[in-house]
Length: 84
Image (tube, rainbow, N blue to C red; front, top):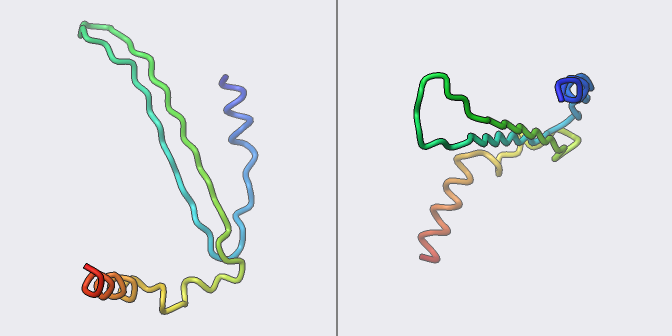
C-alpha cells in the first residue's frame, strides 16, 4: 500500500493555463469503540481527492465585472425583492 501511494503521488500533473477550479474532498472514517482504555487502537482511513478543471483557457474570468462579488450579491438581493 505504501509503495502504491508513493508512486501515485510522484506523478505531478501540469496545472492548466487560464482560469481553473480546484476542489478538494477529505473523507475520514474512524472506527467507533464504546470502551475507552489505555493503549486501545482504532482503525482510521483517510481518502483525499483533488480535482482540477479548466474553466476558461483565456484567463478572462478574473476581469469580468459581472462576476464580481458585489454584482452577484446585488443580483440576488434584487431577485429576492422581486420574486419573494
